[in-house]
Length: 365
Image (tube, rainbow, N blue to C red; front, side, top):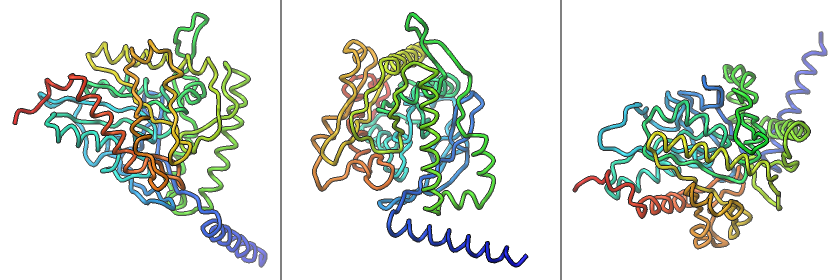
């Protein structure tokens, strides 16, 4: 019996040493994701959750309303008379990871619209980790309830990987989009169970040791999943990337993954247009360094770029780039900084303003 106190103390000191060691010599970001399963089969933000994200560069609180939206208030499904509604679908970039709500793309875009005199609401249905397939399902089952006038899908280098990995959709022999599975909820049952416990929530928001172990474990599991899917589906890239890690190197995307992504974007556009909404795709360029960024838009067929209204703020970021300026964070999970979000929001607002589609929503002064 005397061994147990000794084992407990040894374990405690080992954990304490590991925590102190990581904090001093290899600090990691504390980036919890509070997600659960939506009734329509994909992930959503846990309603009414509040949690902190802490990195060596920033500390922010994420607040989720009762509808699973990062916002400090709820939205009626019924649109206010005379108002324009813009719906955003994306991953952690659109959700605004690593920045305060007021510095997120959605809030900055809405501010620009209101300052210009447009009666617009921007509703952000982004969920960390989303690919185009999950965005499409969320648009069909939840987004259309908000009666959108404009639908915006985020595009990022990780989307083709996410779209194949989820196995929600595939392509038939003629290259047409077909549904494969009704749900994609990776790790959600375990996560739902763990988040019931205060200790677990404290660990994911405060312990760098736990965060390091969790991230490494998740990376290994994802690598195994990639290898499995590579053997059971069409040409899934072996060198996987996630939306929470900095991309380096030249990772080629398989033709199948790109074709699947094209079809998903086309399906989303058709769905939006059937409900009389304009459809845009806005790219978050890939970061290589403080002054080097790249776009995947040239990889799209020119005709498809025009049809999808696919936009990239690459030139805007390049113009603002400077060795002493951070447009993306560098010690967390590499999301846009407040300045980066501002530049992207200003760019997209200008595109909407120049298009003329907002004229009917102009507020008379």
